[in-house]
Length: 153
Image (tube, rainbow, N blue to C red; front, top):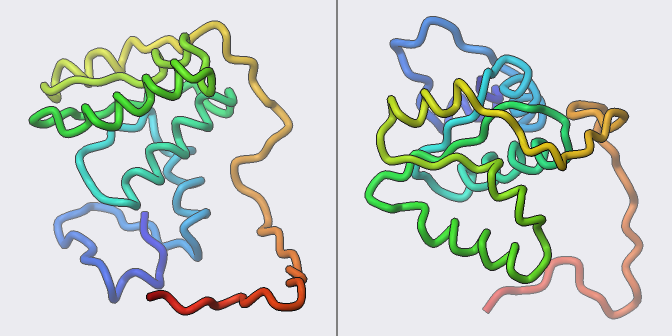
């Protein structure tokens, strides 16, 4: 599933059997969510983190009950998991929501765990919050003296 605008920037694998082209990243993620049985995240960059945390947040809000897993190759995700544990210790994330994140270094074992995943019982679904909807646009009024495009040094 790829936004049309990225066709010239990223490689659409020539061996795939289906390619869904969408109009935006939001549509991409909504379609991925609706078509997926779960979310398996492999080591990657900023976009990977953003997509992982969005699916994790949707799970925490009860918008889906699908497993969210990290394939922990060479302990790549250890610093991220330490950050999540720090968020729990600081009271920003309920301790039982740590179970939403499945981890493993062996793909087959992780897929087996994903197949039997049951979300924590403490999740209270937000049933009236859509995953995909029309974009919301707001005009931003800047105060005098505030530069909307500051120069970076």
